[in-house]
Each structure stands twice: as structure tokens, then as C-alpha cells.
Image 1 (spheres, rainbow, N blue to C red):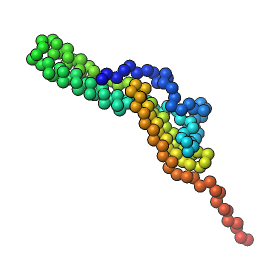
Image 2: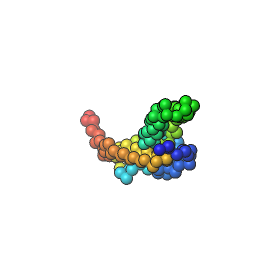
Image 3: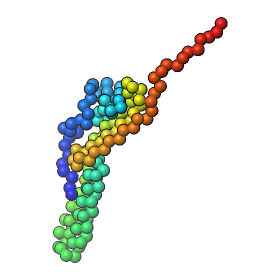
Image 4: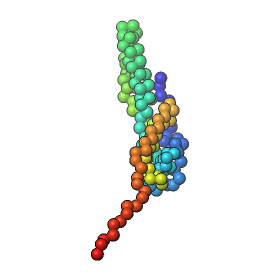
Length: 146
């Protein structure tokens, strides 16, 4: 299977719309028990599923070329070999959007949220961890005795 042509990162809808500008969202990184409020696209990378499909496609191309050895004219064998190597040297597009946030919610929970989605094959993954509950009570100050 050949991966389809990737769209630009700007043309993919956000997983969750930021409620403020990117600079502000990056500074606050607020979260709640329901999930992150202000996530933004922090990273684009190659989708692991698309990469595996591409590597399988290249392996099939190389096998086809190898199996054609001695059965087709030399020029045809060289063309198949060059096509396989050309495909192997192709840089995969960064088509997997990663959104993540680390922060403290208004309820005092410290959460880590990661979400990723491929714009080509629709692979998606979400991981949410409520790491800790921050103590909300103020410590009682001891009075100095005279």
C-alpha cells in the first residue's frame, strides 16, 4: 500500500480548539478531570502505521525486482531495482499530529495528556494520566511566642 499524499499541517482541524492564542495556551497549560482545556499542535512526526505500510511496500518492490532477475530484459530489471531504491530513499511526510499538555487544573489535579492522530490513515491514540492531587489547604502558620 502506498501512503496517500499528505495535506499541509495547517489544513488539519485541531483535536481540541484552543480557547486562547498559542502563546497564552503554552504558558497556562490548564487541565481538568475531563482532559486538557488548552492543547495545541506541539509536534508533527511520521505516523508509525504509515511508515510500516511504506516499508512493506518497499519490501514488495524489492522482492518483485529480485524475482524478475533472469526472467526479464536487463533494462527492465534495472528499472525495477532503481524504482524500489528510489522509493526507499523517499522521505516520509510528517503526517502524525501530536498534541500534549502538562499542567495543573483548577481542582488541583496535575495531569499529563497526550493525543495523536494521523491525517492519512486515521490512526489515533490518547493517553491521559492524573499524576497527583496538589494539596489545596493552606498550611497553618505557627505563632511565635514572646
